[in-house]
Image (cartoon, rainbow, N blue to C red):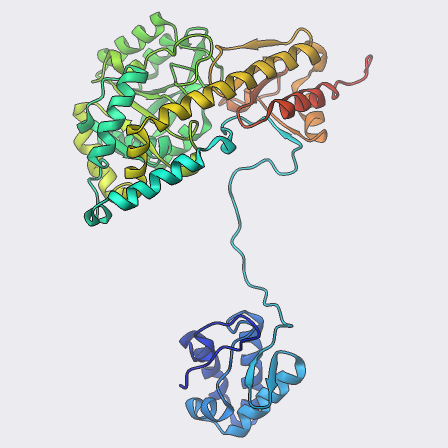
Length: 485
């Protein structure tokens, strides 16, 4: 078929009607009975314009060329062009040919955005998101330029499924220095965040015959779904003031358990030294595994962070972390450090899952680590988040006298128990939502969800400016029902 040209007055599909997809639209039309062939051709052209298969500005073949390609009379094509021009679908000019008009805007399907958000909220206290405006764009761009300039061509090939040796070496040094981890680069796997680390372990445990894994209750609801995707059921285990309750753990029958000992999510406590020792004793006694999710271990504001549990027994603890709280969750970049007994199986599962993490991203992050940019980013975030936590605590004291803030001074969220007069909890949450405040109660993270007379809130603050924090707390305080009701 004769190639089409583009009308300079508007955008065009460079393939035009000569593109196979658009051309094939007309084939059923010209196969119609002779008495309906003209109307069928017009309908097919009209639908091609409406659907966007022929974009505004696309130059159409001449009536002679199109007729020859379709095997129909030139008059049939000429009549179709004239009819659609009269309707406004096409335009024509003397010596300029025929093209798709700009008046018709095709109803092209649009992809939906299913990213988690709180639509319509004036202030969003839902935890889990850092301040994305703190992302170090200039330093990241400089690192990217450096990587593209210095990297050999073979960097773009399939990588070691564990990750680039350069990045694993830099990560091992970082984790040993900042988190007290026993970090062997040969047992360190670069993953797409802690979510992928969890799924990898789930598949390996399932292959070893395990069908259950213990999870903290309350705890992150994501663990349940991730293990379920690997065929492993989550067994909720209660917490006490020191951490995961050891009695229920021992009687549960599980041989693997997920824990957040540095800063338990969502209660905000740090496991006591005694409970950490008991948890490791349990793991040794059943030849089991503790999966340590160190989701925000770098952010402690009142003292140095507690070292990772993995450093006390690297053969019974798998350790995972990511840049989701320190840089941005959209990077999908994390790490998993596994016991030697699991390393080969996890690496093979990683290989079959995705053939390895993107190499340019790995090289970029390695350079970021090597040059000290990541340490500077952690210090920057720590200063900002500490200020915001202080702002939130002060605002709660001002607007909710008698409110109790529990948990250690760490991380990106606090637990706030409000005075009794603001309850019951379900009523308070309904009033807060009406005021435009998105907030979640502590019970939302428990396996047995129920209403509560006392209002206990999990308040995320890292992504909010101090001004928004104060405004949000004031809005919640204004939701108190009139006295006597």
